[in-house]
Length: 188
Image (cartoon, rainbow, N blue to C red):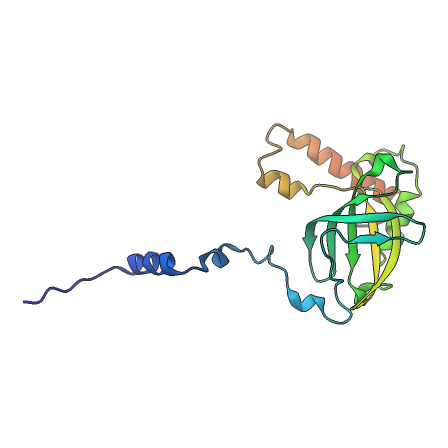
């Protein structure tokens, strides 16, 4: 009588996982992996850490960390190198894809809201636009929006960083911000 060894499929999977040196790829979430096809002609601008952008009005920004990406834009955390604006040292820098430049109303809406009174109810719930300009790169001309950095509520929830906050307060601030948009004729 010969002895045979049998393993269950779960044991086989765990054995193959242990042997797979590239197992960490399975942990990547589709929303965190960037689509490199978006970096083609008329697409996204390739940005590198420590790149320095120069705006037309002598604003200069150093790229420090990627905050997010999609096929229409990438958003980076940057440092405002302009010493005349000490209150806005940390900034969010949004590069809009070249094929969306001039087609999106995002730049105009950001400029419009930035020009309104900051004393309006709800205004404190917005990351204000600080600068807009265009940059030319290997994939075309890109609109760039520089704003105050903001944190996504989703990221705070996942990090358990807001467990002490009242849900009603968050909802009130969101409604206040939407109300401000509507007051100024902007519909989101």
